Amino acid sequence: GAVVSQHPSRVICKSGTSVKIECRSLDFQATTMFWYRQFPKKSLMLMATSNEGSKATYEQGVEKDKFLINHASLTLSTLTVTSAHPEDSSFYICSAPPPSGGQTQYFGPGTRLLVL
Amino acid sequence: AQSVTQPDIHITVSEGASLELRCNYSYGATPYLFWYVQSPGQGLQLLLKYFSGDTLVQGIKGFEAEFKRSQSSFNLRKPSVHWSDAAEYFCAVGEGSASKIIFGSGTRLSIRP
Picture 1 (cartoon, one colour):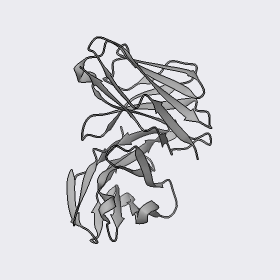
Picture 2 (cartoon, one colour):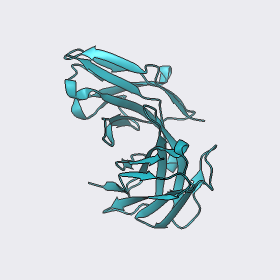
Picture 3 (cartoon, one colour):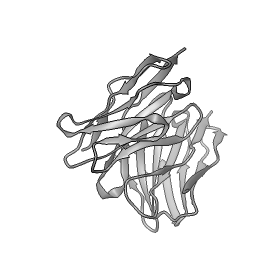
Picture 4 (cartoon, one colour):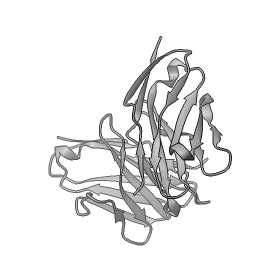
């Protein structure tokens, strides 16, 4: 079945550095991917919609310059947390709809970011 | 705007007992509704979904959910829970053709031996 992978699964970085998280669709192409953020024991909050070949669409309250999204190919979207700070520590999850479209999403396993 | 409400933050049930997790949604048209489960350290797993048709939806692991338009609800049920069902459960609604999914706040399920 369709699978979405994320890399890395876990990352620890120093405050002020930038971190890139990759989301890949395996065995299928995704013109659209979604990025979510999950705080500990909290729900998933949609951050942005990643669009292949065009700019990402950000949800209200999400800083575009802080969370850079690039959807460079039909199988890869990247989320870069720029100048990370401890409050950016979170669990980041991506998802992609199947090629047939519709509402069902395939979710990646998530990336846990810890900013020291 | 769409929204999803899960009124129960944490529920504890005894193993073998029945379970019902509540979910209410707000959406102008016929919604696409989902239930996902997230076990500790695991990714999200789709339990079931409702798009149209029969309002009683069967899912994996013995779960079912019923769409009730009059109550704007999509409650998740299981007749007999197992210890392995302990996890976080998320109700979600799909937003139109954009495939965007909005999640509820989640209900943590604990199982009493």
